[in-house]
Length: 91
Image (tube, rainbow, N blue to C red; front, side, top):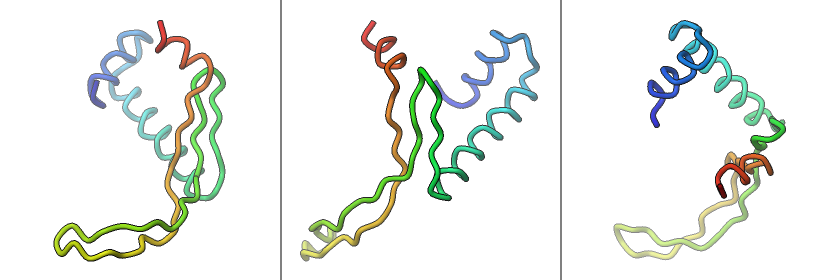
C-alpha cells in the first residue's frame, strides 16, 4: 500500500475528505519525525513505538574499491511494533 492508497482507505473508513486525511497524515508524519529527531519517542499503544537509536561504529568496505573502512557511529530511527500489532500480523 502506498501513501495515496492509504489516504483513500482512511477517507473511505472515516467518511472524511481525501484532502483532510492527506493533511492529517502529513501532520502525523511531521510530528513523529520532529519528535524522534529531537531525541524523543512516540508511543502509540497497541501499534508501536518510534524512537531514535544509537548505532555503534562498525567495519565496512568501499563497494567501488574494496578498501576496508570504519563506518562511524551515528543515529537512526527505530520502530518497535506493539503487542497488538504483532497479534494482528500473526493472525
